Length: 139
Image (cartoon, rainbow, N blue to C red; front, side):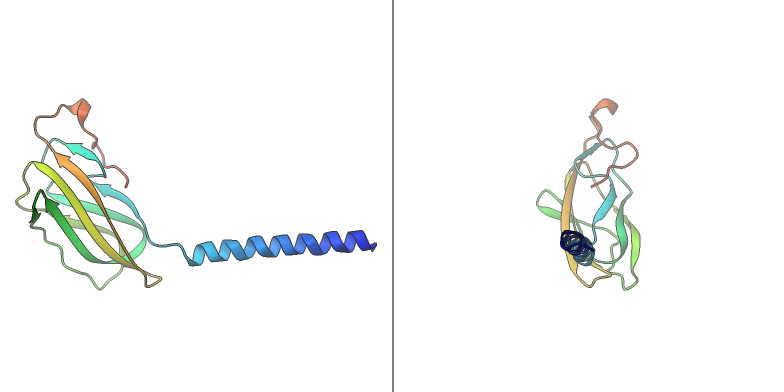
């Protein structure tokens, strides 16, 4: 081979190796994420939900869930779990109309704890056109 062909071959191998390393690094540092919540983030719903559904992009241990109303925590049936799953249903007894924030924390398969929150509103006076929640919104 000529010198320019060897140099081009070596440069191509370096670029491919660098791209492969970047892909592995991105995968290694990817954290668990909430992919769907019902009621969803920013949703305006007409009826008080009987439960909250959370779906993640992989199995997680749900270690915290708080349903916060304005100035107070609402009761739920949440219990920290030791079994990793990708979906959770948390009952919400005693909810009432108002603005709510869901604060959650999970431990992913990579061992990292991820925390986040989202909000929704229950307003019986809104019309169907105003609702932001029909079949569930993604976070």
